[in-house]
Length: 161
Image (tube, rainbow, N blue to C red; front, side, top):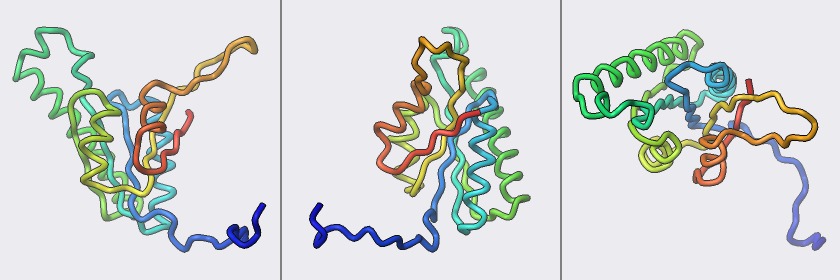
C-alpha cells in the first residue's frame, strides 16, 4: 500500500447526513416502519432534513382501477394521508424540516428518477423484508431495495425488520 496516497487516520464527520430520504411502502410493512424509525434516529441528532416518499404501484391495480381516474385519485389521496401521518410523527419527534413525496409507477425507478434529483439526499433508507431461509438457501434483499442499492446516486441503507 502506498503510504503517500492513503491517509487512514480516522476523522469523524460532524454531521454525516444533512438530507435523509426514507422510502416507505404504501402498506406500512414492518420493514418500512423499522426503516422510518431508523431514519428518525439519524435525522434528529444530525439536524438533517427528512424526505419521505411512497410510490403508488400501478402494477398492483387491476385494469379497471388503472383506467379509473376516480379510483387512482382515491388511492393517491390515501397514500398522501399516510405520508401526512409520517410527517406528523417526524415533527413530533423533533424533526421539523420534513417533506413528503407521492409518486406513481415502479417504486425504485420513481425514487431514483423523480425524487432523488429534487430532494438531493445524502442517504436513502428503505426497508426489506426478512424471509426465513434454510441453511441451503441464500439470502437476497428485495428487488426494489436491490435496485435502489445498485442504482441510486447516493448511499443506500437497507433496513431489515
